[in-house]
Amino acid sequence: MNRDYKNFLSIISTALFLIFLASFQVSFINSSFLNLNLFLILVLYLVLTKNDSKALIFAWLGGILTSFSYFSNFGINSLIFLILTAILIILYKTIFLTLKTESILLISVIGVTLYHFLNWLLTDRELGFYFAGREILTELILTALILLTILKITTLRVVTRRVKAQNV
Image (cartoon, rainbow, N blue to C red):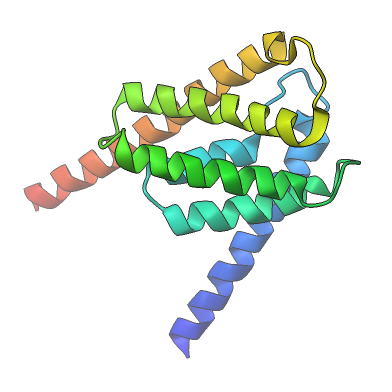
């Protein structure tokens, strides 16, 4: 009974977290100058920490939740996230074997560029300088910085736990 209760609570808390993340994305970040995609950062983090099944599930759910706020075809954003996640998982397992700063930077640049390319390919299809805007450069820099910060903090926590465990 206790294990079922914990599983139920983890599912409910994950659903609430995703709804909060989607509402924060739509309400505050899309209306600001940042042009930052929180679900892309979450998917990149899960790919980098080798949580492939969670990355695919969160990509699908994040795409569905964020597509409620757009006036395009329903499900396109989810399809973009799923294709992007599958490509990033394959790239990370074949090219980037360890979690280094260079791999974090390259995966974030590949992820943001591929996300915008797939978005352009499936929705806009207009000729012009789509990738030459200031917003994409800002998103590239912020995504890389946020991923580096999060992964360095979690790495420091793991190292301090190992040191404490060895000292005891």
